[in-house]
Length: 72
Image 1 (cartoon, rainbow, N blue to C red):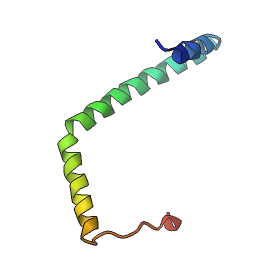
Image 2 (cartoon, rainbow, N blue to C red):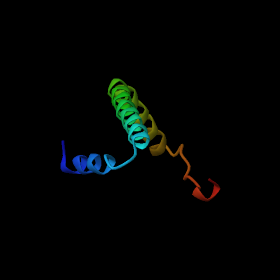
Image 3 (spheres, one colour):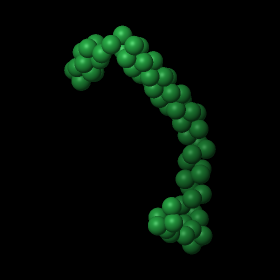
Image 4 (cartoon, rainbow, N blue to C red):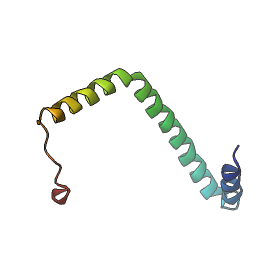
C-alpha cells in the first residue's frame, strides 16, 4: 500500500461508521468500474485503432471540420 493511500485510510478512519461505510462502498464501486473499463479497452484495442485510423484519414482528406467550442 502506498503512503498516500495509507494516509487516506487513516483520515477515513476518523469518520463516522456511516460515512466510512459510504466511502468504502464508493471506493469498491470505483475500483470495479476501473477494472471493467480496462478490460473493455483491452478487448477493443483493434477496433479503437481502426476508428483512430479512419478519423485520421478523414482529416487528411479534408472531410473534417473544426469544432466550434462556443456552440457547446
